[in-house]
Length: 473
Image 1 (cartoon, rainbow, N blue to C red):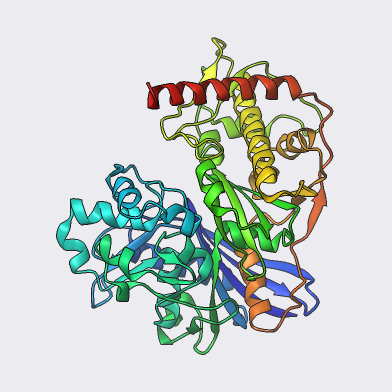
Image 2 (spheres, rainbow, N blue to C red):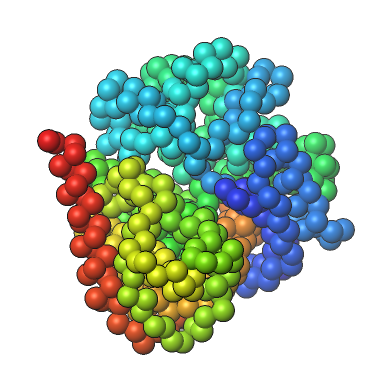
């Protein structure tokens, strides 16, 4: 058995997982430590180091470390390595000047990169910064994503991986595009080196002692959190749809399809699997854990807490149609102006929370069906990952009730951090590449949500028609 360390810098929480793995892939989680994700680079490194120290807790040193993270969020650093401002988050409230600039200057950039035009990608954020703070990018010596920032703290090296680089909209045909970088105001030399799949970013230096680590330990950039989770969960071949349920939801499927130019029009993103074997297609929705953290109805209790008390083996349909778009619809049929719409005058909080969960599950079905049409492979199985399926017992059964294919649930509560540790072991040659996280089959709840899905799709279609009418009077 070998000890491995995985770090997941998430939108809400930083996780550090110490994992014991046999060469054949038998896995035991030794410890997991969590910290809230802060808004500054200095605090992020401090909180990550604190989580790692807690996970290690005087245990032997891991043989390898890998860092996964949310995509797009990054920070500008000066020549001395000091952050020039707070983290520029992917879910920030921003104008669309950067999007307009990119789409007008590089009209086929979405098709070339497989990334839809939106305020999220780094290229759009940088263009916004060049207009709101013109001197900032001139002082920027390095631009790093949050995983890159942790890797730098451990190794002193500025490096990233293809799955994170792709999300910036600056990485085209396997390399940073100097023309795009310069157009949005960034020196191409400010971007980190993109390491090939399986190549270490570097080894720990004396600075890693602040994390409780010694020197000379291999450090890898595991990659984009959703891609890492999908790989770790065993969704490694076309037909396996990984559904990652966190602050936001992401569904990812490996594919041999080259239809990126089409898929971006429906809000899907193209990328690569963390093992480099396949292209990937991913759908996303911000309506997941972030929406269930809200309160509804006549109580101050969060929806997730109300749902946690409901049984896993039975369900009464709410009869309420909800369009679960608190911050627009990302895919399919992207619409940044879409809003949360709960179509009832009822005020019972459990009823409304149940209706919201149903809507999230139905939105997930819509995304899977649209994705299957593009990759031309029907779902052979759906793999759920994330602690929400454990906290809300009925969630997995509702997904299974709306799926024509088997549904399994990863039983590890922190699949990205633990998956990063597993990936570190594979890349370092300590673990069999076929190793996956443990999972269990989910039994469908005996409930018919077909009428609810029909009403949901009808309501969503009406918003699409309205938007098209508004766009083309």
